[in-house]
Length: 367
Ligand SMILES: *Cc1c(COP(=O)(O)O)cnc(C)c1O
Image 1 (spheres, rainbow, N blue to C red):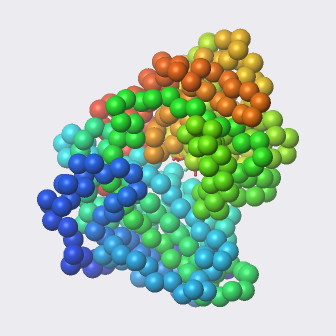
Image 2 (cartoon, rainbow, N blue to C red):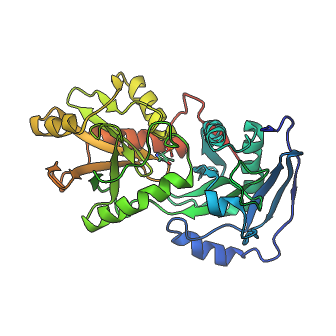
Image 3 (cartoon, helix red, strand yellow):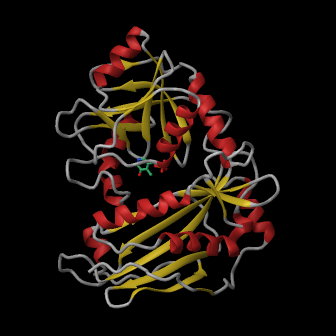
Protein backbone atom coordinates (compact mmCIF):
# COMPACT_ATOMS: atom_id res chain seq x y z
CA UNK A 1 0.00 0.00 0.00
CA UNK A 2 1.18 3.50 -0.72
CA UNK A 3 -0.01 6.00 1.85
CA UNK A 4 -0.27 9.61 0.76
CA UNK A 5 -0.33 12.49 3.21
CA UNK A 6 -3.92 13.59 3.36
CA UNK A 7 -3.51 16.51 5.77
CA UNK A 8 -0.93 19.31 5.92
CA UNK A 9 1.94 18.24 8.13
CA UNK A 10 2.90 20.31 11.16
CA UNK A 11 6.60 21.08 11.26
CA UNK A 12 8.65 21.64 14.36
CA UNK A 13 12.06 23.30 14.28
CA UNK A 14 15.09 22.32 16.33
CA UNK A 15 17.55 25.21 15.92
CA UNK A 16 21.19 24.40 15.32
CA UNK A 17 23.53 25.15 18.23
CA UNK A 18 26.48 25.37 15.86
CA UNK A 19 25.02 27.65 13.18
CA UNK A 20 27.74 29.71 11.55
CA UNK A 21 27.90 33.42 12.27
CA UNK A 22 27.46 36.12 9.63
CA UNK A 23 31.20 36.44 8.97
CA UNK A 24 31.69 32.70 8.36
CA UNK A 25 28.60 32.60 6.14
CA UNK A 26 29.63 35.64 4.10
CA UNK A 27 33.01 34.09 3.47
CA UNK A 28 31.32 31.01 1.99
CA UNK A 29 28.79 33.08 0.02
CA UNK A 30 31.60 35.11 -1.54
CA UNK A 31 32.67 32.03 -3.55
CA UNK A 32 30.24 29.16 -2.95
CA UNK A 33 30.99 27.03 -6.04
CA UNK A 34 28.38 24.30 -6.49
CA UNK A 35 27.34 21.60 -4.03
CA UNK A 36 30.31 22.09 -1.69
CA UNK A 37 28.76 24.02 1.20
CA UNK A 38 25.50 23.43 3.02
CA UNK A 39 23.27 25.57 5.21
CA UNK A 40 22.82 25.11 8.96
CA UNK A 41 19.59 23.11 8.83
CA UNK A 42 17.77 20.40 6.91
CA UNK A 43 14.23 19.07 6.69
CA UNK A 44 13.30 15.53 7.63
CA UNK A 45 9.97 13.78 7.34
CA UNK A 46 9.47 10.09 7.99
CA UNK A 47 7.05 7.70 6.34
CA UNK A 48 6.04 4.28 7.54
CA UNK A 49 3.63 1.91 5.94
CA UNK A 50 1.42 2.02 9.05
CA UNK A 51 1.44 5.74 9.86
CA UNK A 52 2.09 7.44 6.50
CA UNK A 53 4.04 10.73 6.60
CA UNK A 54 4.76 12.05 10.11
CA UNK A 55 7.40 13.72 12.30
CA UNK A 56 8.05 16.68 9.99
CA UNK A 57 10.96 18.67 11.37
CA UNK A 58 13.65 21.17 10.56
CA UNK A 59 16.78 19.97 12.34
CA UNK A 60 20.47 20.93 12.42
CA UNK A 61 22.29 19.88 9.25
CA UNK A 62 24.39 16.79 9.89
CA UNK A 63 25.17 13.18 9.07
CA UNK A 64 22.34 10.68 8.73
CA UNK A 65 22.46 7.44 10.69
CA UNK A 66 21.53 4.49 8.50
CA UNK A 67 21.56 0.82 9.35
CA UNK A 68 24.06 -1.02 7.08
CA UNK A 69 21.10 -3.08 5.83
CA UNK A 70 19.09 0.02 4.83
CA UNK A 71 17.66 -0.99 1.50
CA UNK A 72 18.63 2.21 -0.33
CA UNK A 73 22.28 1.16 0.08
CA UNK A 74 21.64 -2.15 -1.66
CA UNK A 75 18.76 -1.64 -4.09
CA UNK A 76 18.94 2.12 -4.79
CA UNK A 77 15.32 2.90 -4.00
CA UNK A 78 15.89 6.65 -4.07
CA UNK A 79 14.59 9.77 -5.85
CA UNK A 80 15.42 13.46 -5.74
CA UNK A 81 14.57 16.93 -6.97
CA UNK A 82 16.55 20.06 -7.69
CA UNK A 83 15.34 23.66 -7.65
CA UNK A 84 16.69 27.05 -6.65
CA UNK A 85 15.82 29.91 -4.30
CA UNK A 86 16.56 33.31 -5.86
CA UNK A 87 17.02 36.57 -3.99
CA UNK A 88 15.25 39.49 -5.63
CA UNK A 89 16.41 43.12 -5.50
CA UNK A 90 14.09 43.92 -2.56
CA UNK A 91 15.60 41.06 -0.51
CA UNK A 92 12.60 38.73 -0.88
CA UNK A 93 13.26 35.06 -1.75
CA UNK A 94 11.48 33.20 -4.52
CA UNK A 95 11.53 29.88 -6.26
CA UNK A 96 10.53 28.80 -9.76
CA UNK A 97 7.57 26.47 -10.46
CA UNK A 98 7.98 24.41 -7.27
CA UNK A 99 4.59 22.69 -7.83
CA UNK A 100 6.10 21.16 -10.95
CA UNK A 101 8.96 19.75 -8.86
CA UNK A 102 6.44 18.45 -6.30
CA UNK A 103 4.43 16.68 -9.00
CA UNK A 104 7.55 15.27 -10.62
CA UNK A 105 8.70 13.93 -7.23
CA UNK A 106 5.32 12.19 -7.01
CA UNK A 107 5.77 10.65 -10.48
CA UNK A 108 9.31 9.55 -9.60
CA UNK A 109 7.95 8.09 -6.35
CA UNK A 110 5.36 6.03 -8.22
CA UNK A 111 8.01 4.57 -10.55
CA UNK A 112 10.33 3.70 -7.67
CA UNK A 113 7.50 2.31 -5.49
CA UNK A 114 8.07 5.05 -2.92
CA UNK A 115 5.27 6.91 -1.10
CA UNK A 116 4.02 10.18 -2.59
CA UNK A 117 4.48 13.36 -0.59
CA UNK A 118 1.62 15.88 -0.94
CA UNK A 119 2.31 18.97 -3.05
CA UNK A 120 1.48 21.30 -0.14
CA UNK A 121 3.79 19.37 2.19
CA UNK A 122 6.59 19.59 -0.37
CA UNK A 123 6.12 23.38 -0.68
CA UNK A 124 5.90 23.74 3.10
CA UNK A 125 9.15 21.81 3.53
CA UNK A 126 10.91 24.43 1.40
CA UNK A 127 9.28 27.36 3.22
CA UNK A 128 10.20 25.87 6.60
CA UNK A 129 13.84 25.43 5.63
CA UNK A 130 14.06 28.94 4.20
CA UNK A 131 12.45 30.34 7.36
CA UNK A 132 15.59 29.42 9.31
CA UNK A 133 18.25 29.49 6.57
CA UNK A 134 17.19 32.46 4.42
CA UNK A 135 20.43 34.33 5.09
CA UNK A 136 22.15 31.60 3.06
CA UNK A 137 20.54 32.82 -0.19
CA UNK A 138 23.31 34.82 -1.86
CA UNK A 139 22.58 38.08 -3.66
CA UNK A 140 25.35 38.40 -6.30
CA UNK A 141 24.23 38.11 -9.95
CA UNK A 142 23.42 34.56 -11.15
CA UNK A 143 23.83 33.11 -7.65
CA UNK A 144 21.16 31.16 -5.79
CA UNK A 145 20.51 28.68 -3.01
CA UNK A 146 20.18 25.24 -4.59
CA UNK A 147 17.48 23.14 -2.88
CA UNK A 148 17.82 19.38 -2.96
CA UNK A 149 14.76 17.45 -1.73
CA UNK A 150 15.29 13.66 -1.74
CA UNK A 151 13.64 10.49 -0.55
CA UNK A 152 15.11 7.08 0.19
CA UNK A 153 14.28 3.62 1.52
CA UNK A 154 15.60 3.62 5.09
CA UNK A 155 14.17 0.29 6.27
CA UNK A 156 16.79 -2.26 7.33
CA UNK A 157 15.78 -5.27 5.32
CA UNK A 158 17.69 -7.18 2.68
CA UNK A 159 14.65 -8.80 1.11
CA UNK A 160 13.78 -7.34 -2.28
CA UNK A 161 10.53 -5.38 -2.02
CA UNK A 162 9.46 -1.76 -1.66
CA UNK A 163 10.58 -0.46 1.74
CA UNK A 164 8.14 -0.01 4.62
CA UNK A 165 10.15 2.88 6.08
CA UNK A 166 11.14 5.87 3.98
CA UNK A 167 12.75 9.22 4.74
CA UNK A 168 12.32 12.52 2.93
CA UNK A 169 14.93 15.23 3.42
CA UNK A 170 15.72 18.64 2.05
CA UNK A 171 19.21 20.09 2.14
CA UNK A 172 20.31 23.42 0.68
CA UNK A 173 23.58 24.52 -0.87
CA UNK A 174 24.58 28.04 -1.93
CA UNK A 175 25.50 28.10 -5.63
CA UNK A 176 27.76 30.56 -7.42
CA UNK A 177 27.30 31.69 -11.02
CA UNK A 178 27.44 28.56 -13.19
CA UNK A 179 29.57 30.25 -15.83
CA UNK A 180 32.46 32.34 -14.58
CA UNK A 181 33.28 35.21 -16.89
CA UNK A 182 30.36 34.76 -19.27
CA UNK A 183 28.39 31.91 -20.78
CA UNK A 184 30.74 29.66 -22.77
CA UNK A 185 29.61 27.06 -25.32
CA UNK A 186 30.66 23.49 -24.58
CA UNK A 187 31.54 20.38 -26.58
CA UNK A 188 29.59 17.25 -25.78
CA UNK A 189 30.37 13.58 -26.29
CA UNK A 190 27.99 11.21 -28.04
CA UNK A 191 27.89 7.95 -26.10
CA UNK A 192 27.51 5.04 -28.48
CA UNK A 193 28.54 2.24 -26.10
CA UNK A 194 26.26 3.10 -23.20
CA UNK A 195 22.65 4.10 -22.73
CA UNK A 196 21.13 5.98 -19.86
CA UNK A 197 17.66 4.44 -19.92
CA UNK A 198 15.64 1.88 -21.82
CA UNK A 199 12.00 1.27 -22.64
CA UNK A 200 10.04 0.61 -19.46
CA UNK A 201 13.02 1.65 -17.33
CA UNK A 202 13.49 4.62 -15.02
CA UNK A 203 14.52 7.26 -17.57
CA UNK A 204 11.61 9.58 -16.76
CA UNK A 205 12.22 9.36 -13.00
CA UNK A 206 14.71 11.59 -11.22
CA UNK A 207 16.59 8.83 -9.47
CA UNK A 208 20.22 8.28 -8.54
CA UNK A 209 20.37 5.06 -10.54
CA UNK A 210 20.15 6.95 -13.82
CA UNK A 211 23.05 9.12 -12.72
CA UNK A 212 25.09 6.07 -11.70
CA UNK A 213 24.58 4.73 -15.23
CA UNK A 214 25.89 8.01 -16.69
CA UNK A 215 29.16 8.25 -14.77
CA UNK A 216 31.30 5.88 -16.86
CA UNK A 217 30.30 7.51 -20.17
CA UNK A 218 30.79 10.87 -18.42
CA UNK A 219 34.41 9.87 -17.74
CA UNK A 220 34.73 8.96 -21.41
CA UNK A 221 33.45 12.45 -22.27
CA UNK A 222 36.11 14.06 -20.04
CA UNK A 223 38.83 12.00 -21.72
CA UNK A 224 37.60 13.36 -25.04
CA UNK A 225 37.74 16.94 -23.77
CA UNK A 226 33.96 17.19 -23.56
CA UNK A 227 31.88 18.66 -20.74
CA UNK A 228 28.87 16.33 -20.93
CA UNK A 229 27.52 13.14 -22.53
CA UNK A 230 24.65 12.91 -24.99
CA UNK A 231 22.69 9.66 -24.85
CA UNK A 232 20.88 7.95 -27.70
CA UNK A 233 17.75 5.83 -27.56
CA UNK A 234 18.57 2.27 -26.56
CA UNK A 235 16.42 0.51 -29.16
CA UNK A 236 17.83 1.84 -32.42
CA UNK A 237 20.72 4.01 -31.28
CA UNK A 238 19.83 6.76 -33.72
CA UNK A 239 17.56 9.17 -31.85
CA UNK A 240 19.02 11.72 -29.47
CA UNK A 241 17.52 11.68 -25.97
CA UNK A 242 19.24 13.96 -23.47
CA UNK A 243 22.46 14.67 -21.61
CA UNK A 244 23.22 13.04 -18.24
CA UNK A 245 21.28 15.78 -16.44
CA UNK A 246 20.01 18.22 -19.07
CA UNK A 247 17.52 18.25 -21.93
CA UNK A 248 18.56 19.36 -25.41
CA UNK A 249 17.18 21.67 -28.14
CA UNK A 250 18.14 22.34 -31.77
CA UNK A 251 17.26 25.68 -33.42
CA UNK A 252 16.45 25.80 -37.14
CA UNK A 253 17.38 28.84 -39.26
CA UNK A 254 13.68 29.86 -39.41
CA UNK A 255 13.59 30.11 -35.59
CA UNK A 256 11.84 26.76 -35.02
CA UNK A 257 12.91 24.92 -31.86
CA UNK A 258 13.19 21.15 -32.04
CA UNK A 259 13.49 18.93 -28.99
CA UNK A 260 13.14 15.16 -28.47
CA UNK A 261 9.60 14.23 -27.44
CA UNK A 262 8.99 12.79 -23.96
CA UNK A 263 9.19 9.15 -24.87
CA UNK A 264 9.26 7.72 -21.36
CA UNK A 265 13.05 7.46 -21.36
CA UNK A 266 13.67 11.21 -21.05
CA UNK A 267 13.44 13.25 -17.87
CA UNK A 268 10.68 15.85 -18.12
CA UNK A 269 12.72 18.96 -17.43
CA UNK A 270 10.91 21.97 -15.99
CA UNK A 271 13.43 24.22 -17.75
CA UNK A 272 12.64 22.38 -21.00
CA UNK A 273 8.91 22.94 -20.56
CA UNK A 274 9.41 26.60 -19.63
CA UNK A 275 11.58 27.25 -22.69
CA UNK A 276 8.93 25.69 -24.93
CA UNK A 277 6.38 28.08 -23.40
CA UNK A 278 8.57 31.19 -23.70
CA UNK A 279 9.49 30.36 -27.30
CA UNK A 280 5.82 29.86 -28.24
CA UNK A 281 4.92 33.14 -26.48
CA UNK A 282 7.35 34.83 -28.86
CA UNK A 283 5.73 33.17 -31.87
CA UNK A 284 8.39 30.51 -32.48
CA UNK A 285 7.23 27.10 -33.63
CA UNK A 286 8.34 24.28 -31.31
CA UNK A 287 8.50 20.68 -32.50
CA UNK A 288 8.54 17.90 -29.90
CA UNK A 289 9.32 14.76 -31.86
CA UNK A 290 11.99 12.10 -32.39
CA UNK A 291 15.26 13.73 -33.54
CA UNK A 292 18.05 11.70 -35.12
CA UNK A 293 21.78 12.35 -34.90
CA UNK A 294 21.75 12.43 -38.69
CA UNK A 295 19.29 15.32 -38.66
CA UNK A 296 21.64 17.21 -36.33
CA UNK A 297 24.75 16.45 -38.42
CA UNK A 298 23.17 17.11 -41.82
CA UNK A 299 21.42 20.21 -40.48
CA UNK A 300 24.62 21.75 -39.15
CA UNK A 301 26.44 20.92 -42.41
CA UNK A 302 23.72 22.44 -44.60
CA UNK A 303 23.16 25.46 -42.37
CA UNK A 304 19.61 24.35 -41.55
CA UNK A 305 20.46 23.98 -37.83
CA UNK A 306 21.94 27.20 -36.51
CA UNK A 307 22.03 26.73 -32.73
CA UNK A 308 22.04 23.89 -30.23
CA UNK A 309 21.68 24.15 -26.47
CA UNK A 310 21.13 22.09 -23.34
CA UNK A 311 18.94 23.13 -20.41
CA UNK A 312 18.35 22.32 -16.76
CA UNK A 313 17.95 24.07 -13.43
CA UNK A 314 21.66 24.21 -12.55
CA UNK A 315 23.03 25.97 -15.66
CA UNK A 316 19.64 27.19 -17.04
CA UNK A 317 20.80 27.11 -20.67
CA UNK A 318 24.21 25.92 -21.88
CA UNK A 319 25.09 26.58 -25.52
CA UNK A 320 26.51 23.53 -27.33
CA UNK A 321 29.19 24.34 -29.89
CA UNK A 322 30.16 20.82 -30.92
CA UNK A 323 29.01 17.21 -30.80
CA UNK A 324 31.89 14.70 -30.89
CA UNK A 325 31.74 10.96 -31.38
CA UNK A 326 34.24 8.23 -32.30
CA UNK A 327 33.41 8.67 -35.97
CA UNK A 328 32.71 12.35 -36.50
CA UNK A 329 32.55 15.83 -35.03
CA UNK A 330 29.66 18.16 -35.75
CA UNK A 331 30.05 21.93 -35.39
CA UNK A 332 32.87 24.32 -34.60
CA UNK A 333 34.12 24.10 -30.99
CA UNK A 334 35.04 27.80 -31.10
CA UNK A 335 31.60 28.92 -32.29
CA UNK A 336 30.00 31.65 -30.16
CA UNK A 337 26.73 31.09 -28.28
CA UNK A 338 23.63 31.40 -30.47
CA UNK A 339 21.48 34.53 -30.39
CA UNK A 340 18.17 32.84 -29.62
CA UNK A 341 19.92 30.59 -27.07
CA UNK A 342 21.20 33.63 -25.21
CA UNK A 343 18.03 35.65 -25.42
CA UNK A 344 15.91 32.78 -24.06
CA UNK A 345 18.46 32.36 -21.29
CA UNK A 346 18.22 36.03 -20.44
CA UNK A 347 14.41 36.00 -20.45
CA UNK A 348 14.20 32.97 -18.18
CA UNK A 349 16.79 34.25 -15.70
CA UNK A 350 15.15 37.71 -15.71
CA UNK A 351 11.89 36.05 -14.62
CA UNK A 352 13.67 33.97 -11.98
CA UNK A 353 15.49 36.97 -10.51
CA UNK A 354 12.42 39.21 -10.62
CA UNK A 355 13.76 41.53 -13.31
CA UNK A 356 10.94 40.85 -15.74
CA UNK A 357 7.17 40.34 -15.44
CA UNK A 358 6.21 36.78 -14.57
CA UNK A 359 3.26 36.39 -16.98
CA UNK A 360 2.75 32.71 -16.25
CA UNK A 361 2.67 32.89 -12.45
CA UNK A 362 5.77 30.71 -12.26
CA UNK A 363 7.35 32.34 -9.20
CA UNK A 364 6.46 31.39 -5.61
CA UNK A 365 7.64 33.45 -2.68
CA UNK A 366 9.45 31.42 -0.01
CA UNK A 367 10.63 34.13 2.38
C1 LIG B 1 16.88 17.16 -13.47
C2 LIG B 1 17.17 16.65 -14.83
C3 LIG B 1 16.98 17.42 -15.99
C4 LIG B 1 16.58 18.87 -15.96
O1 LIG B 1 15.38 19.11 -15.32
P1 LIG B 1 15.03 20.57 -14.81
O2 LIG B 1 13.71 20.41 -14.17
O3 LIG B 1 14.99 21.45 -15.99
O4 LIG B 1 16.11 20.95 -13.86
C5 LIG B 1 17.21 16.82 -17.22
N1 LIG B 1 17.63 15.54 -17.31
C6 LIG B 1 17.84 14.79 -16.22
C7 LIG B 1 18.32 13.39 -16.39
C8 LIG B 1 17.62 15.31 -14.95
O5 LIG B 1 17.84 14.54 -13.87
